[in-house]
Length: 211
Image (cartoon, rainbow, N blue to C red; front, side, top):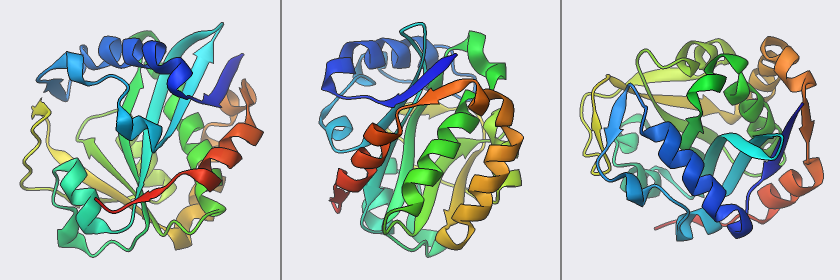
């Protein structure tokens, strides 16, 4: 049984350890300074979802809500403004899973959670930078994400070795994507215990950033 919850500063050390362990083995990019992927001030202003197995963190994703595409572009360092994406937008980052859990579908369970959370807010789009060949790209497409070509970027955090894509899901497709994710990942979702009270509370409280 997995436990899906919202992380806080209390979990900073374990989230940092998970990120460093997972990102050190990334196949699509290499982090330029692995010591800089830990818990920071931006995590305090985000929804950080975590999956535990027997009290050990095995997967996580950070979601930041930006007011518009310009703010998201400044943070992501990818050309979001070229695509007229409406805000506020929920922006994915620090998506990590330990290699031994790649085949478990844990990112699908996390998607199920953030779509449920986003449906209850004023969020108009979900945006994620993903890479050709990454395991979750095809399942995101099946859920309704449009994968936009990304011919340039100025990513100062990582050296990218796979073609990046900008995944976009508009609000009108949130419910459809949620239903699809619940169906496709039903097995792992049924094997999860969700802390819905904490999850809904965090989505309701998280600030919309414009910097």
